[in-house]
Length: 350
Image (cartoon, rainbow, N blue to C red; front, side, top):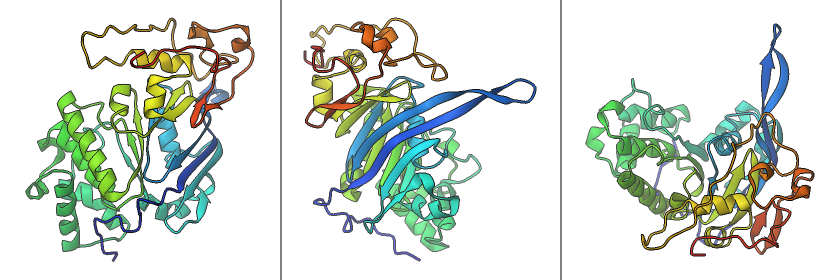
């Protein structure tokens, strides 16, 4: 058995390797119909996404519902088999593997290092399991502990996420939403992972509980040296915990930058609209809300050229004809817009 310890000795603060490198990731789902259920088309849930994630970094992945952010996270963890692209992961010993090409058996050892926090704390926990079984099950599956060792580790994990270990014999329905999310977080941490994908972990919680869970994530990130992809649709939540923010729209990455830079100096019109929806901390400040016209295009039939051009108030002829590439418009700031260097977009405080 591996001796489980809450330590970051193997993850020094000076070590900032690229833990994850995504190259042209695509995830298409077939649309079938007719008598023989033939493939009539595809839903392009993730369509050519590329980015790099540094060790000990928190990257926010934001966008409207249906933009593909959750599918991106699940594909990275191989809960879905990617249609195309590369997912390069740097293991603890420094070796790199392309997760997209691994078999289920080859993926199993990596499941210890790569974990997920699910969005709904009500449906993500087995109602037939006690809290001890919910948190301890991964330890048994990966043969990390048995017997009393499981009880000891579950108690340690519950204390780490702010729960009373005396409650480990209770069932999920006996806890509040915030407590259930803490149980889910404890389950995620039980194998001492390096990479966590948090799929809107606070969206189903009350605002006061959201703050508690976010503060807990930030504290555990520092204590355990975690790397996190934080999926959300609320920029006001993301800005408090993320080092960088990536914005998705209809399966594509349209902007990526340091959090403060992106919020104060957006380079894509879609990001500008998202930022305008963030409420100002000072109620006396009047911000101009940008209301996008029209509906989000279907990922089964995306528009030609730039996917955002039907709703963009700055669109010109080239936008409907040629797809813009995600390019670096300033150091560390990437945008997918033909006029990223020409538009004067308004961010927070603008």
